[in-house]
Length: 555
Image 1 (cartoon, rainbow, N blue to C red):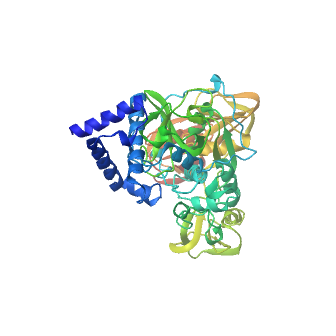
Image 2 (cartoon, helix red, strand yellow):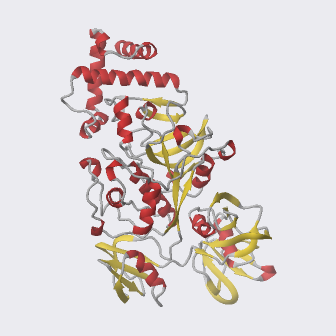
């Protein structure tokens, strides 16, 4: 214990005086350093480093000791300097030099296309520090951090992970793991030599995406981009209507109220190389070299963004890190310059079920891709579901039994999540506001459906205000507003008897849905036009009876 304390003190002193030199160690200090190095090499971190060729067995011992000793020295300096984060050599980068790590990250390959955002001069008014906490990792729509390994595909992991989460949030929070290999190999960018997240999302908007199981990631092991072979798997249609670019911290905060966000920052530095936990608040530049995913924000003595990385779960806080927000300019480590997220439109069909066939109940069949099957079904009388297999859409009048069959994907038509007819020159004014975000009018409904609390919106001159419901209706020129219905199919002329919780005013059945969704214990409602419209909130559906003028539905 005394020897370990002595060697730790040596590195702390060395970091404040001169660069570490293994040749200056005493025999006792060299022995202690060798023991630390051997323990690291035997650990999981050391084995990952060896398997990824971050170090090799035939490296000269003095070289290894020099590298590891320098790492320990830098960690001691960082831990002495940083008040809000801790650093360690206990990750896969312990034997890389700082220069090698910077090159490793640069090789992760952010290649900015000409149509990407230019770095903006962000003013203090666009910084913003939102109060409260958002953490999408608790939603069931953020997959565990993956590992890009020895391929410059951070841009693909950032794009795919952001799309995974947005698609999950728009589809009943059912998480499907998508293929980073497809994007790396097929997106028309530079594969393991780089790319750009928003460009990858635009590719996915047109192509759809295979699951990770059907098209697994191998470039991290081969270090090659690999030839595109996405014809061998079914493409899930994503219904991406737009990819929104952001270049302010305030914009990132607002977008995070809707969905996780792809961000770019500078990570090729010692702060990221040795990060263990806490909030990064210094020791980085602003020239971006790495793409990641912001999954939330909060405050832990410092306001921070919570971010998902692509270096595996053995790095940082189980693969995540936190970084200071609200610093102004281009943000800490340049994070405010280039961010983006996809807008997932409300599909007429529910979540796609991979390797599942709805047997029987066939109406018709016709050639098409999976993206075509939903529109074919919605425009075909009597169709309620489809199965797709090897280039053919099989339209169904019923779901029947769902059976496992490799390569088949199936889905059913939705009876909910419907955007209502827009009210022109009408504002759902003060109250019930969730967030206001820059958006086209056409994206407002999809953005609302990506936020679980949203049941309505108002749009005005380029900004969409998401709302918990329709209230305080006023006339205002240029404002477009709409309810967003998110309950089960409306049963007209049907009354749900009993199980009453309360009754409240509601101008239309769609308002009852919004109120029920916000009321604890509510599972259904009935509506009639009594007193200008009344919602009867119920704990469950219960017995039904015919009653003209009554409209009912379940959540």
